[in-house]
Structures are given as structure tokens and as C-alpha cells.
Image (cartoon, rainbow, N blue to C red; front, side, top):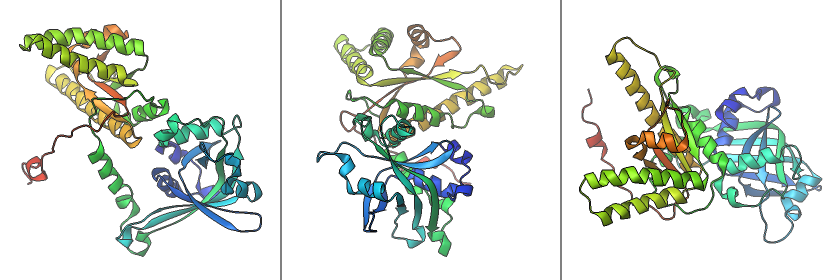
Length: 370
């Protein structure tokens, strides 16, 4: 569920607090409590996704491929069929107990069979949140849906700790920013399309001049298109490398590595500068500044995209080749001349862990503090 969907939910009337829903959405694991007809309880850890069905929040839990037989024989499934009332606990633990937090969800669970309303939406939400589900055959398996949800929550701030808005997600964000890496070698494992769509949606939330979002994204998926783009850009790069005085063997080796990256990555994204909606000034200085602001915001959009991909378990490699041959990229992809290619993001699952370059220490990044 996107943040926009969370904002549109009329949750309080149904006992589900919007802050609680946001907390649940951003966590990765919870503990599902069920009971059989006699009241005997059972608790298991589960991964889950928040999904909106008919305007109301629901919790989707997959029943993935089970090596031991029919998934419907699982205790939690049998319990739900006998007694639909369930609870789900999602929590944060921290050694500083002022940072503790938990949300308790109560609701009515049901088993949703393939083809039934809500099944496809549940699978999409689960695959978007957990890329591991992208390669599992889930279409023939039922899913658990918890509806009519109500929430109860507690945080360390209730006893004088930090405010939730100041605490929630800080450690996760720091890990995300530091974890993102630039990958140059991909395997051919497919990437679920919803992950790509969610990353581009995240790019759309970047700051931009006047809020005009002066960028558009071209997604290249077909092998034929990727091969054509790789071949066309290679010709331009070959000529430029020779101008630099590099030997033929070195040039061809570098071109082959670049071509392999573009051919093996399941998707290529071309971020394009799009100036049609920006302000127009009578003097050239302000017009140049307007375009510079747009270029700066394009970089922020790409960073959002890369972080969203990494959060979903997908890596990206930022290439600037289209800057040196924008006309070639436009021609191969049949783009409107108003779309100015500025970068190429190859994305997929890393074939190996890349070597990461060291970062400057903080005392070198801050040159003055007044």
C-alpha cells in the first residue's frame, strides 16, 4: 500500500489507526496468533503485506510452496477455518527501551482461493514487498486475508521516549542509504514488474522546481530493444575511446563488458529530462538556472528510484552513457525530442557482490560550519 493510499483510508471508523497502518506497512515480519475450535492457541512468524480492498485495509499472508504436502493442512490454516478471529503483532525491539514499539492487529481471517476477489491483489502486494516471491509459483495457492482490522499500539514515547515521527524508520533509512551499491554484473533472474513500477513511483516524489517533476522514465524490457540500444551506443563510445588514445583491444574489452551488462539486466530505465512544463523567462541567465534546477532534481529522482529498488532487494547500476549520445538513444527508442536522455539505469539481481569505493569521512565532507 502506498503512502497516498494510507492517507485516503477512512481507518479510524473501523478501529485501524493510520499511524499504526504505516508502522505495519514498513515492517517486514510479524507474529500471527490463531486458535482452534477448542481455544488452543498457536503463534507463528509470518511475512505479510498491507493491501487495500474496496477502500479498506487488509493484511495479506501468502501460503507459499510447501515441501511437506498440502498447505491447507497447516495448523494456522486449519485454525482459521475453524475460528476466523486472529491477531497479528508487529513490533520493534531496541536496547534503549524508550524506542520500543508494537502494534497489535485484530481481525477476521479467511482463506482466499485462486481466482477469488482479492487473491490477485494480495499476490501483487506480497511480491512488491518481498522479491523472493517473484520467482515462486503462488498463483495456484490460496492466501490468507485478514479483514475488518482494528489496531492497538504502544511506543516508548508513551513513557517519555522519543516521538514516533522522530524515531520510526531512522535506523532502517540509514541502513538503506549505506547499503545501496552500484552493480555492474547481473544474473538473468527476472525482476517482478511491480518492483520497477514502485521504484518509478518513488522517483516521482523527489523535490523538483515548482513541483513540476521535469523528468520522465523510459523502461526497456525486451531483449531486442536492449540489444539494439547496446549496439548503437557502442558505436559512439568506440569512437570516443579511440579519440582518447586507447588501444583497440582495450576498447573492445570495455565495450564487451558494457554490452553484457545491458543484455543481462532484466530491465533498463532511461531517465530523461523533460523541460516542457517549466517556467519560461525572457533573460538567458534565469532560463539556464531553471534548467539547472531541473537537472538537479533529476538526480534526486534517480536516487529515490535506486533506494526503492534496493529496499526491494534489487540492485542498479547508474550509467551516464546517454549524456554522450542523446540523439542515438532517442533514435533507437523512437523517443520524442522533448525527452532528453540523461542516464541509463541497468537493474536486476547482482551476479556477485561489487567492490565498493570508500566514502569521504564526515570531517572532509563538511568544509565550513558557520
